[in-house]
Amino acid sequence: MLRYDDRGFGRSTGDYGTSTSADFATDANAAFAFLAAREDIKAGAIGFIGHSEGGLVAPIAAKANDALGYIVFLAGPGVPTRELLVTQRRVISMSNGASEADVTRVAEQSESVLDAVATASSTEDAHAKLEVLLTPEVMQAMGMPPERKQAAISQLTNNWFRYFLKHDPVPYLRALEMPVLALNGSLDQQVDAADNLAGMRAAFAEHRDATVVELPGLNHMFQTAKTGGLDEYMAIEETFSPKAMEMIAA
Image 1 (spheres, one colour):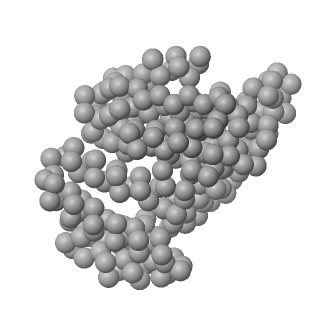
Image 2: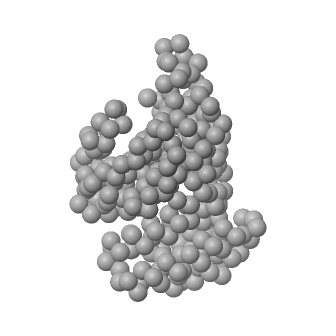
């Protein structure tokens, strides 16, 4: 297995802060080329294992890489990312004990913010729209203190988020021809298993070698969990489910 530093970290060049998932796909293909050039590695057996956003990056990279041997999706998106984010907010809010009315209100406010960013003609336009939209009430509803408004605007209008928000992984999934394995935990609150695995199954309906599996009791980090809440990640001793690891290896 090859792991490498993100852009701008360690010996990696480039600027991580201005990069998008599409840039990370070119990095993945550069890593592929590095491995393929080694005499001790069988070039046709090199694949990608992508977790979360990595499951979005891998199919983008595959579009420019005919030699890719396989892809393993670990909690990868199977629906448009805007839809994923709305569901993520709803699931996390419900897990934290919010009422149905509060969940609906937060969802409406979150969607208005996402729409403003998605339809903006430029970073500056998105910034201007959010200056108006992110009132103290909206900030509070989205779980952010009002004093973090400028930090939130910067995060919501950067290159990475604007690309991510507009991305639809489905056409990329449908174009895949190499063997694929898609896994997701039933307790995942960040990439909802029901929605995203259903999207994967639909996208791979005509695929000759696709396996899509929901693993019961696992969270977004593929740990055996009780609720799947984000606060459990650091409290769980298990780093990665042995069952999931065995499926990947097989």
